[in-house]
Image (tube, rainbow, N blue to C red; front, side, top):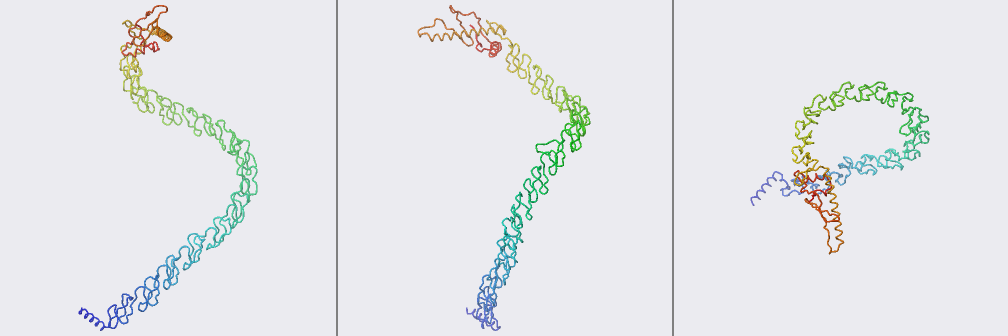
Length: 582
C-alpha cells in the first residue's frame, strides 16, 4: 500500500512539473475531480470548467438543466435553447406542436414543410377547411376545396349555399347556378315551371318542351296535330308519324289508290306516305298497281318489275315464260330451270342421265346411286349380283343376305335348313316354320309318335289326326267323328236322366219319415275311369240297359291326356271325358 501511494505522489509531481493534470482532474495539485455534468467528465485542468456538457445540461459549468422534453439531442451550452426538435414540434425550446403538418415544420416559425393533413390549410396548417368541401380537403395556400363542394354549396371555399330548392346535382362551383333542374322546372336557378303540356320536362335555359303530350305540337306544346294523324305528330312541324287507314301524305290529308290491297287490321299501311301501295291486289304490280302480272305466275309478282314470285308447275323464268324439262318430276328452279326432282329412272343436274336398270325405283340425283336394288342385285348402281344362295342381299355387302333361297339360312345364307322342314326355315336361327308329316320340334328333328296317323303338333308333338281309336271288346275299332258325336249325344242324355233321378230321390227322402225306406234303388253315377250307370225302367223292375261295354277309353298314343283332348274334339262337354259304361 505504501508503495502505491508513493507511486501516485510521483505521478502528480511529474504532471505538476509539466503544468497538466490527468483526465477528469483539475487544481494546483490536480487534487479536484471534474463535475459529473461534464461530458466524459472532462474539464479545464486549471479552472475545472467543463469542456462540454452531457445531454440535458447547459451553463458555464453545465450546472443548468435543459427545460424542454421535445428536444432532440442537447440544448445550447450558453442559452439552453434546443438545437433540434422532435417531428411536428417547434419553438425556442420545442414547446409548440405543429401536428396538423403532413410531415414536419420549421423550428423557428412552425411553417409546415410537406403540406397539411386533410381538413387544414395555411402556412402553419392551423386553419380548418370548410365542412362543405368534398373528401380530399382544401389547398394549403388559400383554403379552396380540392374536389369541389358538397351538394347545395358553391364558391372556392364552398361557404355559400345554393338558394333554389329545385336544383339537382348541386350548383355551379363559381356562379351558384343550378347544374340541373327537377322535372317540370327551368331557369338559371330552376325557378320557373315548364308548360303543363310537356311530358318529360323542358329545356333548362329556354323552357322549350322536350316532348309534347300525344296529339299536340309546337315549342310550348300548344297546337293540335292534324285530325288524320294516328296518335301524334312531329314536335316542330306537326307532320304525322303515321296515318289513319287509307289516308296518306305528310299531314295524312290524302287517300290510297284504288288498286292498293286494302289492309284494315292496322298491322301495315295500305300505302306509304307518298301514296305508293304497300301491296297490290293479286295479279297487279307497279307503284300504282296498274300493271298485270304474267298469267303463268303462281300467285303474285314483284311490285317493282313484274317478275313472278312463283311459277305454275312446269314453267320457269322471271316471268315464268319458259317450259321446264320433260324429265322434271313437276317443278323446276324459277331462276335456271334446274329440276326440283327428276322423274323415276333419271338423274343429273338436267335429269338427262338414266338410272341403272337394276335400281328398284329412284337413284341419287347427284351420282346415280340406287336408292334400292331389285332382288338379287347390290352395289351403288346395283350392278353386282348377290351370292348364289341369296334372293335379296344388302346393297353394300354382297354376303349380307336379307332373304335366302328355299332351304338356306344364315347371314350369308350359307347354312342348310333341316331336311324335315316343309318349305323355308327362319333366316336367323334356322328354325322350321312347318315340319314335314311325322316330324316335330324347333328344327323338325323329332319324330311324332308312331300312333299318330295324320302327324303331330310342331311344338308339343301332340297328334293331330282326325280319328280316335277306342278299345272295344279287346279289339281296335276306329270311330268316325260322326259316330263319336252320336255317342256323345247319348252320353249327354244318360247323364241328364241320372242327375234328374238323383235330385228326385233326394227330395223324396227328405219327405219320408225316418222309419220308411225307399222301395226302389236310387240310381247312381260315377265320374271315374270305370263308371257304371244304372237307369230305371218306368213301370217295371229295374234292369240294365243294353249299352255296349267299353273296357278302356284311351288314345292309342302313349299319353293319356292326349286321348282326353281328342275326345273333347268330338264332344266338348267335359262331363263326358273318361266316362265308360259297364
